[in-house]
Amino acid sequence: MTQIKTSRRRIPSLAEWTKFAILILFALVILVPIYLAVIGGFKTIGQLNADPVGFPKPFMAENYANIFLKSRFFAYFLNSSIIMVATVAVDVTVSAMAGFALSRFTVKTKNVIYQYFLLGLLFPMTLAILPLYIQLRAVGLLDTFIGVILPQTAFLLPFHIMIFRGFIKEIPTELEDAVKIDGCGKMGFFAHVVVPLSRPAIATVSVLAMVASWNNFFLPLIVLDDKDKFTLPMGSMDFVGQYLADWNVILAFFVVSMIPAIAFYLYAQRHIVSGLAAGAVKG
Amino acid sequence: MDGKVSAIVGNNGSPGKKVQAKSHDKALFYALLLPAFLLVTLFIIWPVVNTVFYSFYDWNGFGPLKNFVGLKNLRTLFRDPLFWNALRNNGIVILFSVCVQLPIAFLLALLVSKSSSRPTIFFRTVFFLPYILSEIITGVIWRFIYHPQFGLLQQIFAKFAPDYSYTGFLADPKTVFVSILFVIFWKYFGFHMILYVAGLQGIPPEYHEAALIDGANPVQAFIYVTLPFMKNAIQMSLFFCIIGSLQVFDVIWSMGQGGPVHAAETAVVYLYKFGIKSSKMGFGSMVAIVIFVICLLFNVLYQRVINREEK
View (cartoon, rainbow over the protein chains, first blue to last red):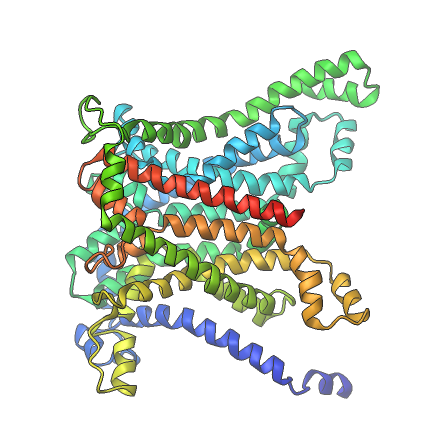
């Protein structure tokens, strides 16, 4: 007992102290701005002016309350949520299917098709945005959610197919043979083995898609025009325009709007490393 | 039905039946790929092909395409000093990212990859956090930090250098770009760090130990064991870093739209300002094509370097 205690309480070496100091320093660089934004939202503009760094006294919950009572926050939130759920559903289904096809079939054209998808990684959305706008206008998808969902999903697919392909490739062939003997075809193998085993890849792709959709600004900015259809990032920019000098109100609005993204992330973060490891890094 | 076919093949696999199963497999293969193929083709490849087409026209985006101007858009673009200024800024972002951001991300990955103790996971989670915040939120948080009246920097200067009158780094053309580079670092280094962590965790620990037992010092073990295993992760991170640097837009837009006086404009900001916002669709398309060609050249060059290293 005592022995274990002493070994646990040994004094950390200089190297360990340095390492710890470096980590703390970087963590502070990340957390201090976020912390200041959060407490800034609890201040009056006078407090913010006099002492932006100190603790708010008294706490002003009013800025936060007003967001829910007076702004269109809920409408923006709902729009962003609808677009996000649809994007994740389409993206995960389509990229898992394609990743499965590209890793588990022996068809000659397989590599050419994979290269074709990878080509998509080289095109930023900005490159396609002008013709995309004209295309969407021609088929009447401007100012609709579908006009945001489908193109943004398309731009996520290349990287996400890559993750699924890498991940599914690692599933041992013995499992596939075993399922075959049990009388299942390729689709049975996909449904009963690949999908359950791919949970880390599904989690990684879902989080990446959620974050990308939730944060997308450029595409909705160009597709959506009606204020009732605005997403949160667009609404936020609109809000900044309205409350130009009221930094306390602006900070409160932004703090509330970043909560959902942080919540998804904390929920799924333990899968992100393993998903990326198997998918992207092993190729 | 499909279950039966593959069961037969699995049991006795006679050649005739195998061919039947194969054509069935082929149909399934294409059916699985069809949705992805349609989405990528309709919303990425087809618009990009159209961009090439539009770039030879003088067009405001409405009405028929009829004013063919050949390479005039390209000539106008190359004669515009603002475009070269924007490209130079992209070059600075790339240099900064490759020489500062990635090495620091790698160092931090080394510090947080090994154990799965609580503090390690805490630091990993914190470092990746800015990546999931939107560029718009990031921009506003940092506009607040740099704010001449309410910002943290103003407080720091007031305390430690009271003689310096701080007027806001984002309002001064001399400091705005460096200030944004710092924000780019803040936002994206965690993504690269996670790629490196994923790579480091794939290295079997025995290899490292074996090298140390064989008398290698830690630096040698790092160069001869760790780095070769990290090739894939480094390649991925370099690829995303360079392509991302060439395409950077939202962060800059949300921190002052590339101003003051064009000091922080990059190629995509230029495209948005002088193509889309000015309703010059033909000219904007040409800007987009030039950006793409640069991305492609980078990619080809980089594949070359990698292939040479392999030899």
